Length: 83
Figure 1 (spheres, rainbow, N blue to C red):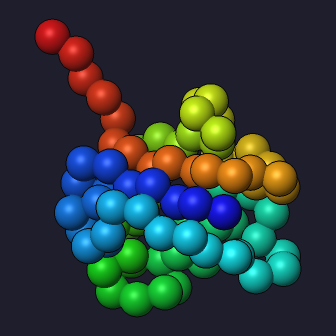
Figure 2 (tube, rainbow, N blue to C red; figure 1 turned 135 degrees about the horizontal axis):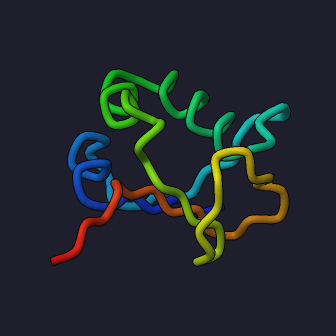
């Protein structure tokens, strides 16, 4: 699956996009975030405040308890404010 990182998530992770294959047992967005945080200090820093990070699966906004099964693309981005 393809992961996309936006705004400060991208800056802290040090990558804008990547192709990954999460290990078995990683079934939800929340579990994916836990796995990503364990990949190194830059990801731990990027997802340190995971509760505020938004996610989209195949361009549809989802909650962190959403299943990632069959996902082609998952995007992570900080909350958006308007004005």
